[in-house]
Length: 209
Image (tube, rainbow, N blue to C red):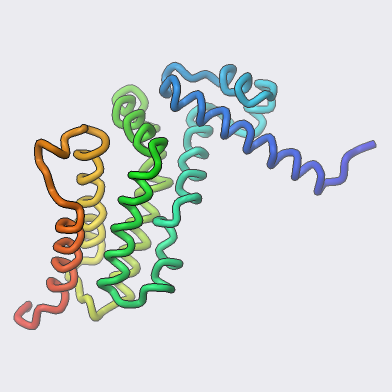
């Protein structure tokens, strides 16, 4: 007797999660190049055919992991953050703090960053998956935030978003990925406070033409 569609969907969702969990273990332990769909299937406890039926190839599997990682991070939900912090300065400080807190508390994210950077020469699709699923949505949402808050009055919202996010990414790269926070030290609160003040002041300066 054929299973009801609701049961089939539930089983499919469970297998998808099992495959993603297995892929996460394999990528973190062995990197991208050394991970195979066979190893993912074995770790997930499913057949290789099942893995391919859910994900077209290893690149698609890695991209789906990026999507899941992004969906589990509160820092990427700018609308939710904005709902509880209407003041632009508070919002921007909350966004920046949330981003750094989430990265610091999640060694998987740091490991993925190292994999992406280390393998991007041979596998540029990894870097593209990261930008497509994590970097681009944040830049777009932050740009829209600047556009919808004319009181901040940035001259170019897209550039302002890149400057803001880029500063935070660079801080993480130096401190957590390159292990060089002691070489070019910067107190986190000093960075965040002045970054926010720079954006807010730049938009509200009455002498600005």
